[in-house]
Image 1 (tube, rainbow, N blue to C red):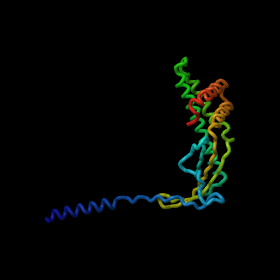
Image 2: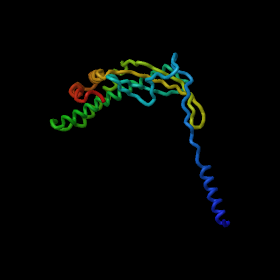
Image 3: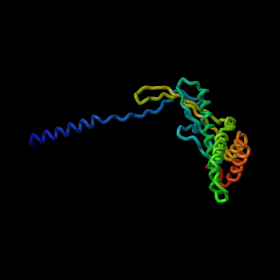
Length: 212
């Protein structure tokens, strides 16, 4: 082999070595290590989930709230935060259901309508939805709570303690209609706006088979 070929082979070898050496190592994902949990438990309850917030089973919806706080946080305060998170999931569904019912009404009865709703009316309905979705949610009972402290390894190799809290509440699907109507009735909007939206719920609940 000529000297030029040897030189070329050496150059290619050095380039390959440099390329391999420059590939960064992939950071290994280390799972959180549980160091403490709710008294009397040795594992997470089956309902606990970090990826799912709403579960439909049979005629009931379950709403799961999950919150992470620093490891030195008070457990009871953190549990109140996850309680609020689970109720917030209900509020989100209530607002979505009212919106869907109202939009369905607009679509289904567009032919009979004498004209489009004004922007003022739309704003009133939007405001009503926002208020109605948050009324009386504090009255919904939390079914169960769970907490755990974990040691988490960061990407730089350092460790920190994190407190995770979970809360779950259940609502029968049939009660969601009552929740919607009750929330609308207690809202501070004008009476005609409340009556209009309540009529939409009553008229279209069966047509839409309730919340999806």
